[in-house]
Amino acid sequence: MNNYRRITRAYQSAVNLRPQRERDADVFEIFASRLRAAEHEGGLALAKALADNNRLWRTVTTITLDDNNPQPVQLRKSMLALANTVIEEMARTAPDIRFLIETNDNIAAGLRGIAPGGAAAGG
View 1 (tube, one colour):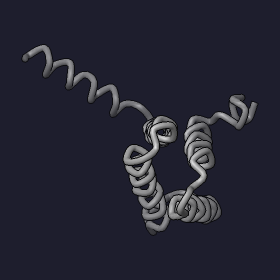
View 2: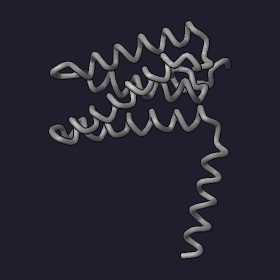
View 3: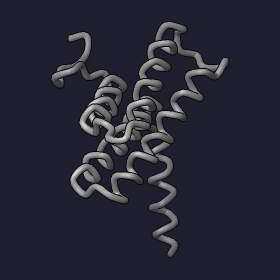
View 4: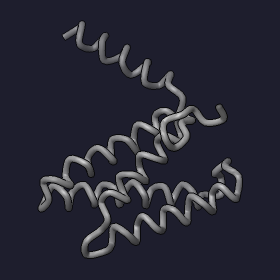
């Protein structure tokens, strides 16, 4: 058990050393992956993935509206508009799962500094 605790502490330390943008990108990638997997299963799996993705985007909305958010106002407005679009899509009877997956993937790529198509942004 002692080894397990030491490994756990080391892992937690390593995770905390990663930049916030990378950790945020991981979250969007995880939710895109869940949607991707549930897309083929349908039923309860898809309903759960959509509910989880809805929580993610409602959290984005809350963070974006926070007065202490250090991001530029125009970026916050753009993120809020995107969040509203995603939330509206998820409320549809038959949401466009591909759109939701691509949106999460694109946000993750942007957080990592990767432009659409896989090239590093700015280069």
